[in-house]
Length: 546
Image 1: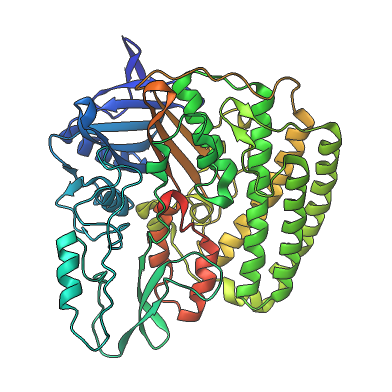
Image 2: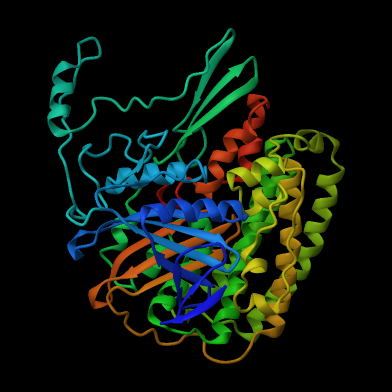
């Protein structure tokens, strides 16, 4: 990285255009590029070992800028956000460079009508025939409360659907939602459709298995059923109001999203949280990580027929969540992280309670780990199940817990730490086997590391205020937030509008990168192992409206 001395602009190694630093806690930069630079930058970043964090689009036609495609990329110097103004409504496809971009590009079309030129896959991802084909909800000329009439005519099953089809076509609505799954042909091959409605109280997703006997030849996912218009809702809010919504993008990652959003607001406004607030945010984030890993380890044991594991880990998680409620007012820590700091402080009595709880949990989880490690039936189900080789993980951009279990040494707390992680020397847990057993081991090790970090944070917690005033943002101000949540990195890009309102907010969940890899992980395994493999990833159906 080198400064060109031209208004703060600089060049990052390997990129042939100038970038402008984005203020804030993250080492981040921004650049406006043309189509050729867009493609060349993506290819260069890929060749240098970087990767895609997120891809999205925005509508700036009311400002005379047309549609804009955006991509956030990891480079050696940090995070680079590229913005490509579009002459029309298309931009170069980058899915051949970053496979994870494919579904992001499809979602960008469903929401804004901007398409990737020559993209191989143009199937709808979010729409599910839920709104007219010529309506793109994130365009500024579509009202947030837009409604359309769905024909109510009931057609008898035995009668032709001509009338219904005609009325639908008049409204621009497809007659059916017949998604063109890829078919696998061959002797003995048949399909098993699973979902979108499942047997338990879990979120909807459709999984189409192509199998021979019980062996999986191919899995294709269809998600997006949980789309709930979060990005459109953001555009009706002020920066302060958006904090509550951000913490509810994905309920199991409330702290990660709230911190990323607060970081983006602070980046856009120049606010600086007090040191005590930053240390408390880290404490909350590590407690969130522990809670989710406890739940996953219990369900993983249960999926391998060890109900004892489910009972023990859920007991521990329940006690942990009750402490959240007692000390911070919410079991899942919602509304505790706010722009400018945090909303709840820790008393000396609360700190002492957490220290005692940490000691007990440390010993108990160590005992349970020894039981899991020595249980022959459990290990027989875990080892070599759902394996993702490191080479495949790198090629497809696998991140977070699943990535670290496949030798992808990436953790924002280590690679690009912000306060207080710069003072904590986080020990990253990684393994190479890439199977269910490795993902279980990473979870155990991350629990122990997070417990260690919680001890350090409580012992080193600085005195002082827990929140700072957040000034109003100027129209057009841009900020980013980038936080290592329990599942993987959470990213938020925020642009302010007039009157301290949100012009555009794009939240991004690590599940976007990891869902496609799950399709590969299950190949060659048997169908009954899919729940176990799926749970070992434990991806979000609802994070950023997947």
